[in-house]
Amino acid sequence: MKISEKISPAISIKGLTKRFGKTVAVDNVDLEINEGEIFGLIGPNGAGKSTIMKTISTLLNPSQGKVEILGKDLSKNKPSLRKVISLVSDYSVLENDLTPYENLKLFSLASNIEDSDKKINEFFHSFGLEKYKNKLTKNLSSGNKQKLNIARALLKSPKILLLDEPTNAIDVESSRFIRRYILNENIKNGTTIVITSHYLWEVEQLATSVGIIIDGKIVIKDNIENIYKRFDSIINIYELTFEEKDHEKILTYLKDLSDVLAIKPVSKEKLIIDSKDSTFTMNNFKVSIRKLRPTLEDIYSYIISTPNQ
Ligand SMILES: Nc1ncnc2c1ncn2[C@@H]1O[C@H](COP(=O)(O)OP(=O)(O)O)[C@@H](O)[C@H]1O
Ligand SMILES: [Mg+2]
Image 1 (cartoon, rainbow, N blue to C red):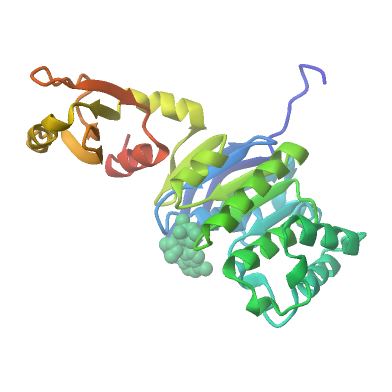
Image 2 (image 1 turned 45 degrees about the vertical axis):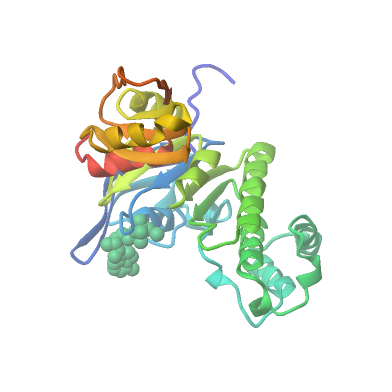
């Protein structure tokens, strides 16, 4: 590729506003997500995440603003762009009274997917759902229903996969399977993925970039490493290691410090604290202090509790 050639982002959102009556669900949002990226969109309930996902997947029309997918205006190319975008939210889209096979077949027919039986069988195999193939979908566990829902979304080999809380209330093993499957899709096929989740460790595991949305406005968006770097000097998480005999004394001392926001006991010889103090010391105690990198949850909580940051 020539250096002068401009690479279009997979998703480009400019000035997107979505109103429902008087409610401004999405408020003048700009967002660019590059091809092959895994973008984590996080924010409180009602922040506008699902509205953005539904807009990208053509289920909702913007009140204002523009969405471009792979360089094409979404509003003018809906039928062709629908072929390359899949949205996964909860599994209520599945027909409970059909079998998993019938569900995938129905979706294949609706989406004009070629060679669908071969693809469907491959999915049943790789998702470990072969033995449920001809049972009624309503009798599947919620984890297996969600796996089936993911298979449904992947049948058309989407270039853009939108996952709106894909592992909400799903058991540990199924959600781990789903995360690994998604990562593999991204690595194998370069699928661009947007994921929303309230499980911030999940976003941490998956996302290359993160956006935080509050009241319909994006308050921060960056590569996840840049976000860690930026907040490493603002959020002060320390691991304190000491002798067991000093445990009570140290705990009592810390509880009285107004700069200490939270104390997490790890063992009789170890505590983790969150402090306002970026030069935290404990000179009168025999304690070894190690600064830890904040987690995405630490950063998120900091941003949510410190508006206009
Ligand atoms: N179809 C709708 N009709 C009216 N209001 C809606 C509709 N969908 C979402 N909203 C409102 O828009 C705001 C954003 O909702 P949503 O995008 O679902 O947030 P999130 O997914 O971040 O929890 C909320 O105030 C919600 O009540
Ligand atoms: Mg939502």
